[in-house]
Image (cartoon, rainbow, N blue to C red; front, side, top):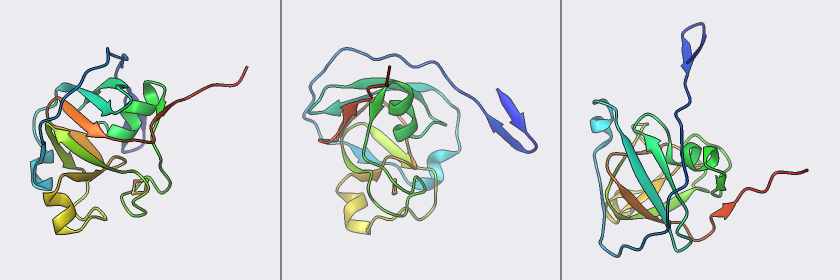
Amino acid sequence: MLAFGNLRVGLRPYRVCARTNSSSRGRLLPEASYNRAMSTHTIVLQPSGFACEAGEDTSILHAFEAAGIELPNSCRNGTCRTCICRVRSGEAAHRIEWPGLSFDEKREGYILACVAVARSELVIEAPVARRIVWGD
Ligand code: FES
């Protein structure tokens, strides 16, 4: 854990997991449920099968980047909607009160990965995910 004034930054270990398949529909938790005990969950992307583990204090976008998987993103603050994806199974919550999603989109399971965190094991539709290739 690093501390910069009042800001604390911590990295958790991540590992890439085996590919899995799931077709059940997920649900979103209200944003207010974000503040609770932390634990680690496995998140799987469909259709790629890429997976990682993330603590409940780590955004889904950041967790995948730490595991070497890139999701589309731009603003990284829940405004631009570039990182929109859909929860197929499991529970997720947003870290901000008003993410850039409509009520209907939230009800249909859409999340913004840059400000969303896992609340359980998750399967997410993210068709544009790709492995990060670092230069030589
Ligand atoms: S990157 Fe802009 S809303 Fe997620």
